[in-house]
Image 1 (spheres, rainbow, N blue to C red):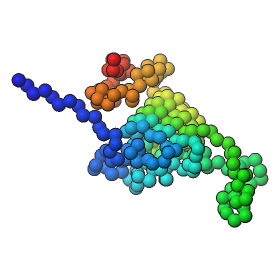
Image 2: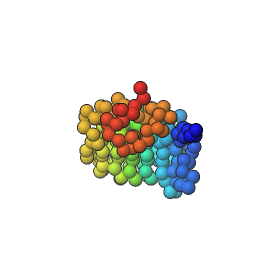
Image 3: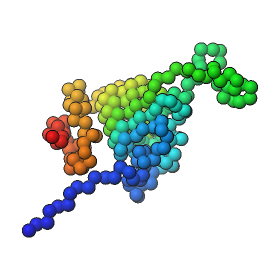
Image 4: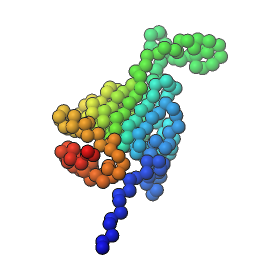
Length: 218
C-alpha cells in the first residue's frame, strides 16, 4: 500500500530570519516593538547592513500618535523609509526652525509646536513591493498589490495594484484593469488559512485571476 505524501507545511511567520543563509532578510512582525507600528505576517525587510534596526533607521520622526500600518506579504527593499508626521515644522511664521526643542528658556515656547498639521496614519496594504530606496511621506495610503519603484518619493495615495515611480512618484500603470482588481480584492488570498495558501503557492505566484478564484477556499 503506497505511503501517503506528507501534508504541506506552511512557513513560520514568527521566525525573525526566514532565510538562515541570508541574515540581511528579517520578518518585521517578530521584530518590531513599537506600539505605533503594526505589521502583518511575512512582510520582510532586506538590508545588508543591519535590517534589525528598521524601527529606528527606516521609520523616521515617529513620535505619535499616528501609526504606521503595513499589511501581510510586503517586500521592503533596502533603504525603504517612512517619514512620519513628527517631521512637520511650523510654516506660518518667518522661521520654520523648532526653537523650543533646543532646550533652555526656549522650551517655554513648546506650545508653538503643538497642533501641527497631521495627515493621519500611514497605511500600506497587503502584497506591496517596495524597490530600493523608496520613501513614503506621512499619511500616505498604499493599496493592495501595489509596486513602488526604486528611489520613488511617494507623496500621495497609491491605488490597489498601481505601479508608481519617480520623484514625486506618479502612477505609471496599473497591473490589472478595474474589473480584475475588484476580483483580486474579493479573493483576498493574503487572508486564506495558512494550509490552504500553502497548497496553492504556484497559483498565487503565477496563475491567472480566474485560477486564483478557482483555488479560493469554499
